[in-house]
Image (cartoon, rainbow, N blue to C red; front, side, top):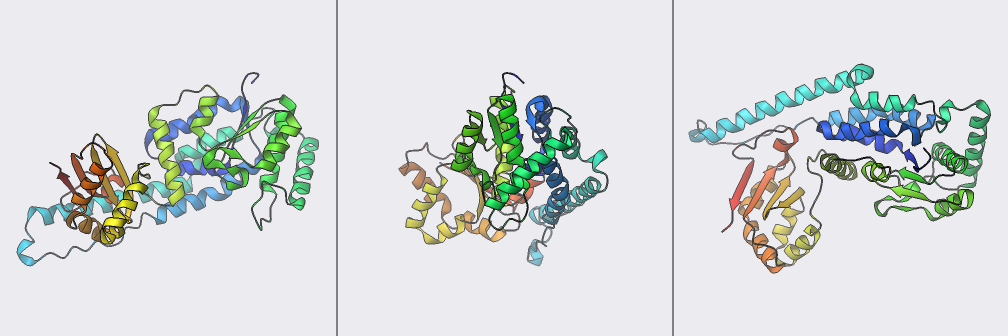
Amino acid sequence: MRDKPLLFVDTNILLDFYRARGEAGLSLLRHIESVLDVLIMTDQIEAEFLNNRQKVISEALKEFAIPEMKVVVPAYLQETKAVKAIGKGKAQIKKAVETLKQRFAKLLEDPAKNDPVFKIVRRAFASDNSISLKARGEETRAKILQAALVRFQRGFPPRKKQESTTGDAINWEWILHCAKTFEKEVLIVSRDSDFGLFERGLLNDWLAQEFKDATRRKAHLVPSLTQALEKLGITVTADEEREENRIIEKAKNGSLNPHGNFPVFWPRVLETVERRSSAIFCNLTHATSVTYASDKLTIYFGFNDLKSLREAENGGCRDLLQEIFRDFQFAPLKEITFANDIWTEFDLEPQSGFAKTITCH
């Protein structure tokens, strides 16, 4: 612990891993176990995690309720391959959703056996090192709680408006105590605005000054666990970094969007589209995400938003986007794909009628 900064991981970061997909998300979370010697932990974090875990899982489960997808097809087309593919695809989706619901139920019923996130986090809670408030004596705990109460009563940050509990104050007072005791800088991983402008990595001015005055050192607000782990000398894979970026975007928009992001230039594209075609602009604002790689552009729409998907395919959108990309001096687009999130969310192959790729010439 001598040469490393201390690490504090907020509850919201831990709960966000219930949005993770595949092994990359879990392997990133497992890195926490390799830094337990510098992990600042409070029973407040444990209580918040256990108190909100079921709610987070239940909310995710509700979002798996897929609305009825009605496709009206004339009788003379009922036996076509396209119609049969749609029927087959709907059956696949329903089966996948039921499987996921069963897994969610097991997570709730027996987390110690079936919930990998719970098992990893619980091992962190069980740490009995000197920077775990739960493992300290009654005298130290009472001192921290009293300081937190005074902080709360005076309205000092970190604190939400109209907040009625001292949870954030307890965490901050313990962070200060550990940093001062061990003469360490601290990495604070949180996406809670109470701590500052997390997207820019800027700690609240009051907290930054208070920390410096108390410790003669610096506290760093870090928006991602990936960044914090790298500062601690832990090697993070590209897959793990991509997965956390997806989790962060997913947390921001509160959706089950499997991609969860847009290219940095996309707002500029939309501004140009709005000036040239209000109809196409309105349609593209319904996109849930956009990817761009190797001169191939893919625009995703919500899994039940077939209307927007069809309008994008047939409304002159391709020609306008190609024109704009040329104006921006990007390489000419080789392909434009309009796709529906429903297939990528369940790792299924897009079927006819749900995705359309246009090869550009």
